[in-house]
Length: 93
Image (cartoon, rainbow, N blue to C red; front, side, top):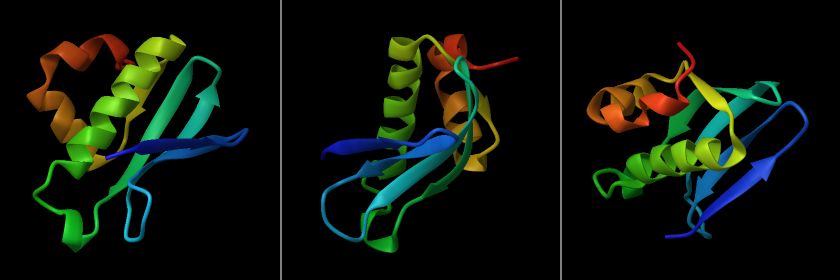
């Protein structure tokens, strides 16, 4: 599935898929080098299909490409970080 990144001055979101319902992950931008992932939402019709994990992986890859760090406020994203110790390079400690 396709992931679309929409960004504003103060934050943004990652959207999975092109038709409703869509899974999404939102963030706030604290600085040019720091984002705060605050929410992940996966509709019932997409649960168990790896939608949330795909969004989390994309956010990590985006942070690596952009050279920024992530503060993980979202419980789902924090749980994904626990499962993927190789993502620690983008986490703000």
